[in-house]
Image (cartoon, rainbow, N blue to C red; front, side, top):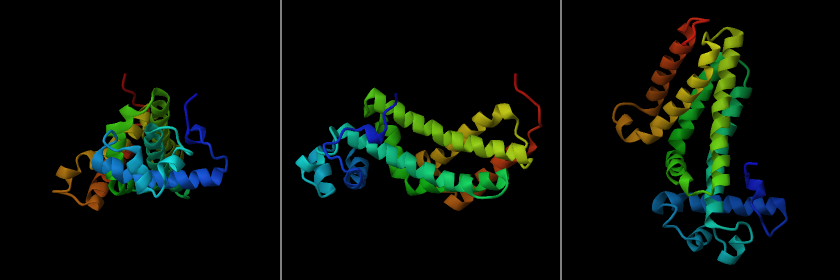
Length: 216
């Protein structure tokens, strides 16, 4: 079974206090990991950054890898929350897709350093924790699949069912591209322009693909 944050052992049994302290660790560790890298950051530095003693910090986690795991889960959860809000709004599948793409790209901009951190440092996680983080990525991609299917059902998108999964992954990668290639893209586009142009291209593909046409 994949690990999740609630299964990280803690000496403290008060769930609200655990969440509060781990929230402090996440905020403190994020900036340290971005500035120094995971391996060059010590647990003592994390404790100092989040205002805890090293002894107190170890009451809530067991290792520095646990902190990295919490950071990765926080970043994924923030994106997932925003996409679910877009998915919950009333409207057509096409409208939902437009809103979800905008949210995805906006989060990639606001959390770009943290997103880079995930892809650079996930390899440092234990196998079980890495499996959980990758599963969260799949769950976020599935949210786009749901929106695309809703558009197919209400007739506002004409994407073939067999293309849904691929299109969902394409949307994820286009958002990540703003993070990975922002050094080049920002010379030519604002985030708003990038979002508008990429959304237009995606909607064009999702609107004009012939129903029933399958790639063998």
